[in-house]
Image (tube, rainbow, N blue to C red; front, top):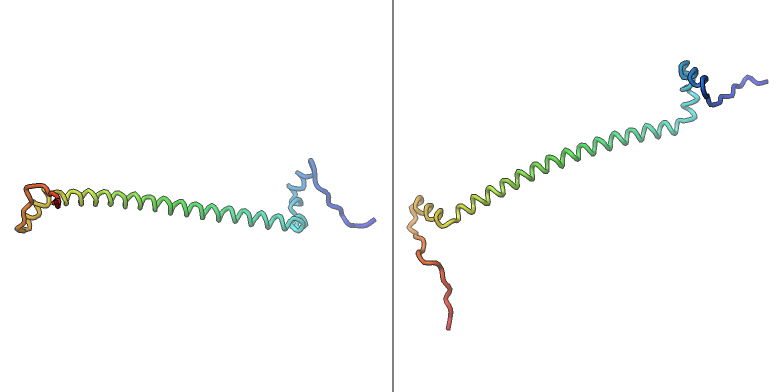
Length: 115
Protein backbone atom coordinates (compact mmCIF):
# COMPACT_ATOMS: atom_id res chain seq x y z
CA UNK A 1 0.00 0.00 0.00
CA UNK A 2 1.11 3.52 -0.68
CA UNK A 3 1.34 6.33 1.85
CA UNK A 4 -0.53 8.77 -0.37
CA UNK A 5 -3.65 10.11 1.21
CA UNK A 6 -6.69 10.63 -0.92
CA UNK A 7 -8.60 13.73 0.06
CA UNK A 8 -12.28 13.47 -0.50
CA UNK A 9 -14.92 16.07 0.07
CA UNK A 10 -15.90 16.25 3.68
CA UNK A 11 -19.51 15.72 4.55
CA UNK A 12 -21.46 15.78 7.75
CA UNK A 13 -19.60 15.66 11.04
CA UNK A 14 -16.21 15.32 9.38
CA UNK A 15 -16.63 18.69 7.60
CA UNK A 16 -17.32 20.42 10.90
CA UNK A 17 -14.28 18.77 12.47
CA UNK A 18 -12.09 19.82 9.50
CA UNK A 19 -13.24 23.44 9.76
CA UNK A 20 -12.55 23.57 13.50
CA UNK A 21 -9.13 22.00 13.10
CA UNK A 22 -8.26 24.29 10.21
CA UNK A 23 -7.80 21.56 7.61
CA UNK A 24 -10.71 22.64 5.43
CA UNK A 25 -8.89 25.72 4.12
CA UNK A 26 -5.53 24.12 3.57
CA UNK A 27 -2.90 25.10 1.04
CA UNK A 28 -4.15 22.35 -1.23
CA UNK A 29 -7.64 23.91 -1.21
CA UNK A 30 -6.23 27.27 -2.30
CA UNK A 31 -4.09 25.66 -5.01
CA UNK A 32 -7.07 23.82 -6.46
CA UNK A 33 -9.36 26.86 -6.38
CA UNK A 34 -6.88 29.66 -7.08
CA UNK A 35 -8.60 30.72 -10.30
CA UNK A 36 -11.98 30.95 -8.58
CA UNK A 37 -10.58 32.83 -5.60
CA UNK A 38 -8.79 35.37 -7.83
CA UNK A 39 -11.96 35.81 -9.91
CA UNK A 40 -14.01 36.35 -6.75
CA UNK A 41 -11.55 38.96 -5.42
CA UNK A 42 -11.49 40.77 -8.79
CA UNK A 43 -15.30 40.82 -8.91
CA UNK A 44 -15.48 42.17 -5.36
CA UNK A 45 -12.99 44.94 -6.19
CA UNK A 46 -14.88 45.77 -9.40
CA UNK A 47 -18.13 45.98 -7.40
CA UNK A 48 -16.56 48.35 -4.88
CA UNK A 49 -15.03 50.52 -7.63
CA UNK A 50 -18.33 50.63 -9.53
CA UNK A 51 -20.20 51.68 -6.40
CA UNK A 52 -17.66 54.46 -5.76
CA UNK A 53 -17.90 55.75 -9.34
CA UNK A 54 -21.70 55.67 -9.19
CA UNK A 55 -21.80 57.61 -5.91
CA UNK A 56 -19.34 60.18 -7.26
CA UNK A 57 -21.45 60.62 -10.38
CA UNK A 58 -24.63 61.02 -8.32
CA UNK A 59 -23.00 63.69 -6.16
CA UNK A 60 -21.91 65.55 -9.31
CA UNK A 61 -25.43 65.34 -10.74
CA UNK A 62 -26.91 66.69 -7.50
CA UNK A 63 -24.45 69.60 -7.41
CA UNK A 64 -25.13 70.40 -11.09
CA UNK A 65 -28.89 70.35 -10.48
CA UNK A 66 -28.44 72.77 -7.60
CA UNK A 67 -26.28 75.02 -9.77
CA UNK A 68 -28.90 74.88 -12.55
CA UNK A 69 -31.69 75.82 -10.13
CA UNK A 70 -29.62 78.79 -8.91
CA UNK A 71 -28.93 79.89 -12.50
CA UNK A 72 -32.64 79.66 -13.37
CA UNK A 73 -33.50 81.77 -10.33
CA UNK A 74 -30.92 84.37 -11.38
CA UNK A 75 -32.40 84.35 -14.89
CA UNK A 76 -35.92 84.99 -13.59
CA UNK A 77 -34.69 87.77 -11.30
CA UNK A 78 -32.71 89.43 -14.11
CA UNK A 79 -35.65 89.14 -16.49
CA UNK A 80 -38.01 90.71 -13.94
CA UNK A 81 -35.53 93.51 -13.27
CA UNK A 82 -35.11 94.18 -17.01
CA UNK A 83 -38.88 94.15 -17.56
CA UNK A 84 -39.38 96.70 -14.81
CA UNK A 85 -36.59 98.91 -16.23
CA UNK A 86 -38.08 99.15 -19.72
CA UNK A 87 -41.51 100.31 -18.58
CA UNK A 88 -42.42 103.78 -19.73
CA UNK A 89 -42.84 105.10 -16.21
CA UNK A 90 -39.39 103.80 -15.23
CA UNK A 91 -37.86 105.33 -18.34
CA UNK A 92 -39.32 108.76 -17.60
CA UNK A 93 -38.20 108.48 -13.99
CA UNK A 94 -34.69 107.60 -15.14
CA UNK A 95 -34.66 110.53 -17.59
CA UNK A 96 -35.60 112.91 -14.77
CA UNK A 97 -32.94 111.50 -12.43
CA UNK A 98 -30.20 111.74 -15.07
CA UNK A 99 -31.41 115.23 -16.14
CA UNK A 100 -31.82 114.22 -19.76
CA UNK A 101 -33.95 116.67 -21.76
CA UNK A 102 -36.18 114.07 -23.36
CA UNK A 103 -39.90 113.69 -23.01
CA UNK A 104 -42.16 110.75 -23.54
CA UNK A 105 -44.61 111.15 -26.41
CA UNK A 106 -48.20 111.89 -25.41
CA UNK A 107 -49.71 110.13 -28.43
CA UNK A 108 -49.20 106.49 -29.27
CA UNK A 109 -47.14 105.68 -32.38
CA UNK A 110 -48.95 105.31 -35.70
CA UNK A 111 -48.13 104.00 -39.16
CA UNK A 112 -47.98 106.15 -42.23
CA UNK A 113 -49.76 104.80 -45.26
CA UNK A 114 -49.05 105.81 -48.78
CA UNK A 115 -51.92 106.46 -51.18
